[in-house]
Length: 334
Image (cartoon, rainbow, N blue to C red; front, top):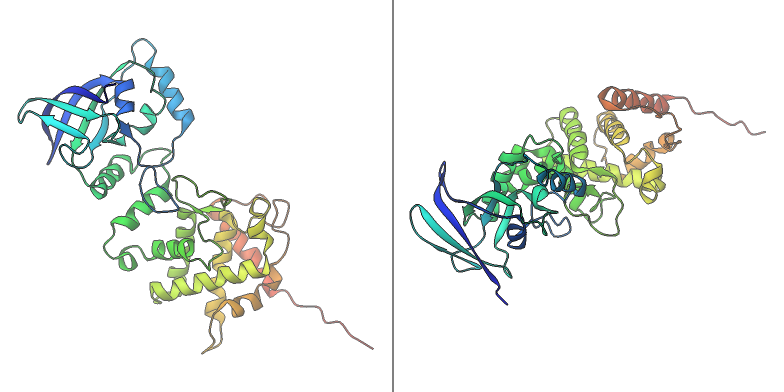
């Protein structure tokens, strides 16, 4: 059985990068390539998970008369003879690919190619030559940064991987990732990054949602450092999970872990820090002591029902503040 395939190409450049241009059947390109989907458990990879509906729509389209597409974009991973071999230096070239190694990384074609493994329709392609995974990620972000449907959380994760000094450049992202990566956090491995899901854990909110909430903390607690804000955020959410455990054990029934709850409770966290007596440590015990009034009905039928968007988040924060300020009834004995 032949485990190699040969594609005629043209060598050239795309701005400052050497590339190959060519044509091949969808069946061959699918067999020689892979999508490097982000594995949220290990942090490896960078692509979003496959959207089958999107891919099946494209499958139907390519079989219609008059269909066409821009070139599929790949990267030849590794070095010459590492699953692939290139002959010819200028102009016409021949690319030999190992079907076992599948050396073509799908930089921008995952959803177009995802369900075409059995079709012989001819497709144009462009392949970068020997980009590193980091360089692939950068190009993917540039190509798809404004793409409709691409998870903002996945792009945020890319930024985290590419930033030289995350604490200075994107401190709110550093804190959001701390909440996701710290084992003692109730958000540990429970923020959706847009990659392949961690098995056995229910989704609550996205990384982008938490990042926007952390931005609220930075704005209101300025000039505290990223490390201090990360500690405050961690201890606050630990207190929320302690006082309202069902919000995390049964997240589908609670708005606490949805966007509206995350934003509103973050405002409460900032209020609590700013109201703390001089010298007081704003730790989990402190936050738990002020959370009692907020352990109300957080279901979609409760006081926050129907609220959404930025205006809804502000209204929800005002409702929480009113609940905290209401006088406690004193019970007389005798």
